[in-house]
Image 1 (cartoon, helix red, strand yellow):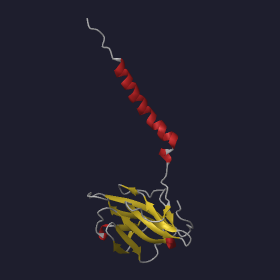
Image 2 (cartoon, rainbow, N blue to C red; image 1 turned 180 degrees about the vertical axis):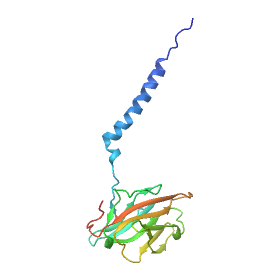
Image 3 (cartoon, rainbow, N blue to C red; image 1 turned 135 degrees about the vertical axis):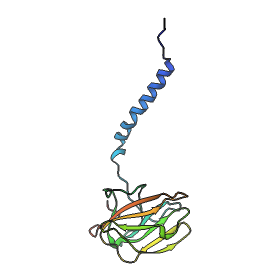
Image 4 (cartoon, rainbow, N blue to C red; image 1 turned 45 degrees about the vertical axis):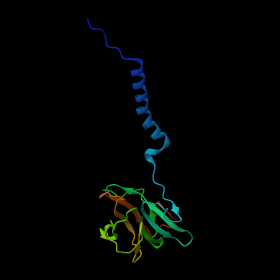
Length: 172
């Protein structure tokens, strides 16, 4: 006759711990608000020394600095609701900061409302490109299309909105 298979106490304890961890992860995310958190767009004095990404250089007459734009690894079908909002008069430059900066022609800014590419004057530094708009940006939704930092051939996409009614820096 066959004896019933017994599961050791250690095996049961291990399965219990793994089960508890798996069940607790969603509860921790809900309790901390991580599921409905939005990026905090803050005004910084300068691009950090080892900053990696795209920054809008802004000046509203009383405060000035840079605001980092947050990237998506794919082009979105719908414009993100949590994209920052800026007054067109406040934007003085788009700064790209990356190790191994690419050629300036590989970075693009599109106005999504009419699918036009915005022309900029570019000044290149060893780890930065500073794009200065030739004219104030018209109101609308914008997307920066740029290569990812490093040896990757991937691209990343960053979004922001221009609204003449935005008064302070930064506005969500």
